[in-house]
Amino acid sequence: MTEALSLSDSSLLEFEATVERVVGDRVVLDRTAFYPEGGGQPADRGTLAADGESWAVSDVQKRDTIYHHVDREPPAVGTVVEGAVDADRRRAHSRYHSAQHLLSAIVLAEFDAAATGNQLYADRARLDCAYDRFSEEELADVEARMNDLVEDELAVRWYTMDREDAEAGLDPGRTRLDLLPESIREVRIVEIGDPEAPFDRTACAGTHVENTRDIGPVTVTGRESRGAGEERLRFELE
Image 1: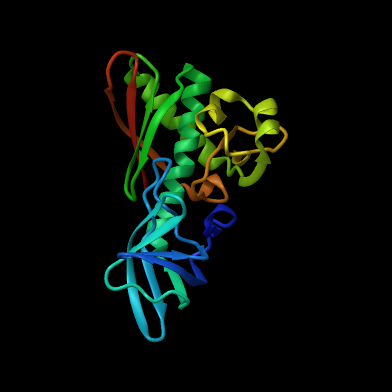
Image 2: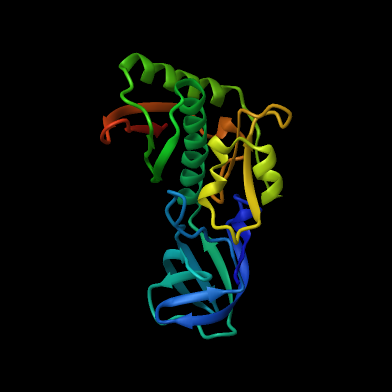
């Protein structure tokens, strides 16, 4: 199983690894800093390089392990490669993912609107939640609250936790551990704010900034109905 370096260090962009397996145009490495698509966050892109050659990584997916899709015949098994993640794309996704956590926590705490889905891009994001309809005034309040939290410069941290401890001690409305397969016995927790009384604490495997100030100004760009009792909120970062 590939060691997923992004789980411990969201800022890691360069790494060395060994090719363990090749499947068509897909490369399996013993370790990688590339984030595979998941949790509403798109896959990283970047390059692999070895012996004066370079391969563009166009997609990264996690199945039984992490697969890197490359643009031509892959390097041979046993090749030591230098990986480089597209820094601008990674940072954009990390900012949007952290902002999405703020938004999810706000609508749950203030409107009892549980998140039902989300999707991040490099220039925008959306959150689906269980709510009848947000008014323009409510959207303005949500936007103001998000920007207040950015200006509060709250620390963002992540760590692993035994699943039983997490289920016993964390808010099930936010962690949504019930959605994880029972085979997963250790979960990664992302926490925002004071550890003694965090603003948000939830299970998440995505990449994040280390402080809410790094998110930057937030604009809620609109809403739309997703059917009875479900709304979609859209937002952008400066």
